[in-house]
Length: 369
Image 1: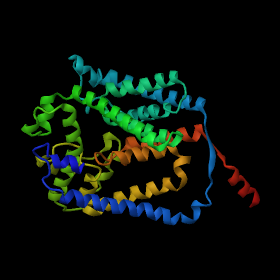
Image 2: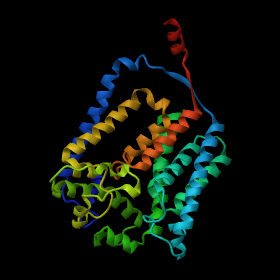
Image 3: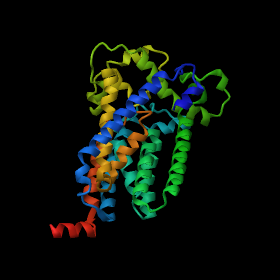
Image 4: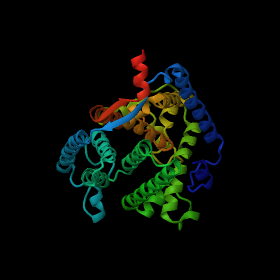
């Protein structure tokens, strides 16, 4: 992101690296501190914890749960068709539709259902069921033009592949790189179709020197540089007059969400040009650098919790955490209600589909005790 920021693809790009480096340093130290704290607290327990040589997945129950998720998602899609008309993707065919941000209701439930379906079916050995469930989830995401959730699911699938595959590490990196590239290409196609080049250039204030640059380059350069640029302007200019809890508003249902007390400032500064301000923006505006320390400390604690053994006993939830971490330079995916719903859905999936069998050494230790 710092390299992309140094290109200054936008007229509003933050001019120096001082504040970005400061934010990075504080975040890194806080996150590592939380991680090491968990390792320290569990140092005596890690060696005594159960180890598993066999984790079995009940495919039949997995398909039943996915079918339930699909049926609920289909009901929500049908309700939105009746109340809001055709999904945003039909605007490609010059049909009258609502903007993708305004279209439909219950998206805080619909999107995590679709992500759960897509992630869960990646564990199904049957290509027929992969096509059925994966096709449904992918098509609905495409119709709703939700690139974020599509990539969120893709990263979780990569994490699960790394946890369950016996492929060598080097090949895993290659597979991950190819998967990310394909997801970015698909996201680029969706972006080009829902946002014209002229609108893109004007909205993101792309410099005239890059007016003829290829769209994939502009998408990549702007997406990697603008969030940290926006965050830097916020860190420089935001007036901290009182503490807020706006960073917790995403936990609430959409119809209960209060008005953001920081939105007036965001709208008044023309240099803040997009809604992606990294995961730090709301925490910083709530409590300055203390907010930055707190959220990174919590991420470090959660990471340490999973790395002390729970990543194998709760792989689906671990995948959600890692995918959220992968997106932290762009969005805060830790606190939204949709993420909490996804965690609940995946915990239910783990509870009813995973079976653990202790290793021989662990059984002998228990018998000896």
